[in-house]
Image 1 (spheres, rainbow, N blue to C red):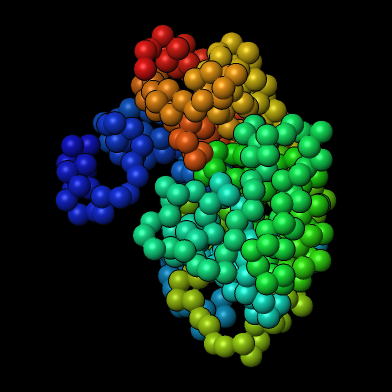
Image 2 (image 1 turned 60 degrees about the horizontal axis):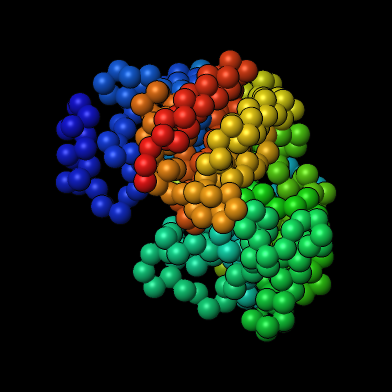
Length: 434
């Protein structure tokens, strides 16, 4: 099918609320490492990695080989039967998860993982109420949308009464109109205020992303999770950290972004980059907390930890440990951030550059003094970048944050190419009238 036929069938057969990037949507046909090609044969540098999912590059041959070997043995058996490839992957995963997070429940998506984490916390503590963050994102199920703190992603009657939202650690647009570090990280103290005023005083858990992904790569102060962890535990809750977008060395230095804060969560969720694009997620916890599920009720997962997905996960993790380490992400990500900061110096449209490693965000504003969001400029920037064959993402409550997050296989020359294309795109957009 050519592009026109694909789009016609998309409109005819798929739900209309599925978000598509670009005024002229882009059907991707195939990829190789850092590049993808559309159905018309045009080549693009991919700096969004399928929403931070194609972690070790498109068409990675080692991952593909792991998949092919498993396809030739067994496609599926469900969690009713022990699986050699699943336990091998779990063992490899336990080698990099922090602290004693060495017990896993496998699912198929980040939504699945976050739901499992919340249920586990409720079972273990005996409490029900959950604190999440404004601007956070947890997925598309009713519970996950209730956890989400952005109205565009909350479809229909999604309110679940036991979920409350605390202030986001959004320093660029501080909800308390304060400035870090003089603020004393007051946003973290808001978690305690929410518990005292909006709950029974005993909570099951606090759930947050170390960097808010769909929120526009909002990056909290380094002390934030230390303060919040103490509060959450004092009120009987568990700390759930959502590493769906941030995990596996993407943010540099550590395998998981929360490790930078010195905090070890009670439960940690991961998906996206875990298997280079195959549908797989994991909810990790300790032996003690996992033991709470014994006798709590029966559970199976038909597709959770599917053998082919687990094989992809094992191959992906092998590639990360061998080639695409957190230290490498820190080095290449540093080059990327330096270049983005230089673009900020050049273009007043860029109000903020934030993020860590290979997870960098640019918030675009009409005016730096008023910080008025610039969603039209953001859309125009993405369209212009596409015309020069660069793919980036966007996010944020106001639709004005560019998300720059290439595969972990990005090299210096790819960063330089992306920065050159972004420089051109910003120059073009600055000349437009809105």
